[in-house]
Every structure is written in structure tokens, then in C-alpha cells.
Image (tube, rainbow, N blue to C red):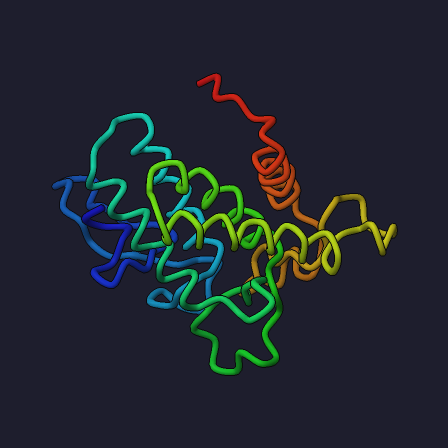
Length: 190
């Protein structure tokens, strides 16, 4: 929480620690637009990670981070709820979408919804329901069988030019998890 998460509740991809002193050095965002940018999938990993950390520990600080990371994500996401690959790109209108980030967000927000009440819970559940529908209707291989995965238009590593506008296995996993959660078919075994 003191390194990966910035003061505005956006997330770095990684954080470098001095191997000799153990002192924090600097954050990096390898698969995002820039080190200080808001990489959408990284933001959803933060929502997931801190929500699960709260579930396992009951530490309210983790819940606070998850909720604030979720707010940043929901305040930044596009109208069809499928985020562009990085919220900080100079020309968002032409930026590639990342269906995997949307799927991770849907599954993670459904988990986070278990720990909050009222309008916040409703907002997370509404997002998840709508994004799963949008992923199926617009971003799934249901309409394009040339891909091996379930979702299309994932964005793996844009700066390296790898896995852009394709199916990504982690996007498929979280899409299935979100669908299972919506159907009430999940159990936690760990």
C-alpha cells in the first residue's frame, strides 16, 4: 500500500526496492503508457488484490484501498464500460480497448460488493452485470470464431507491441469468474 498504490489510488505495475538497503526506490508501469500513467488492467489487479487481501485478513486498510482503486477505475472507464488499455494515453479516442481489464474489474467488483452496502454495492453489481453483457455481446468470440479464446480485443503489452487486440487467457478466466459469480456458482476454496 505504501509503494504500489500512489496517493491518488492509482497503481504502479511494479515497484523497485533497493536490494541492499530494502528502501523503496521507484514505481514502474511496464505494460502501461508510462510509469506514472493509469494502466487500466493494473488498476483492476489492484482492486482484485486488495479485495482478496481484505477477505483473507479483515484488515480495513485493504478494504479502503480496494474501494478507492475501484472509484478511480469507475470514474475513468468509457461509456460502454470497456476500458482503453491505459487511461492516460494522449489520444483516448483512438486507443485500443482492453477486454481483459473489463473482465477483471467485473469479477473483482462482484467480490468487493460482498463487503460494502447500499449504493456502493449496487454500483459495483450494476457495473459487473452490464460489463459482462457488453463483453458477451460485443467483445466475445461468439461473433468471431477466428480466435481461440472467449473474449476478443484484449491488450496484453501495448508498449512492446505484443498481444494487442487479441484473446488473452486471463481475460477469459475473469470473464468466466464474473459469469459464475453472477450466477451464484462460486465457492471459495482457498
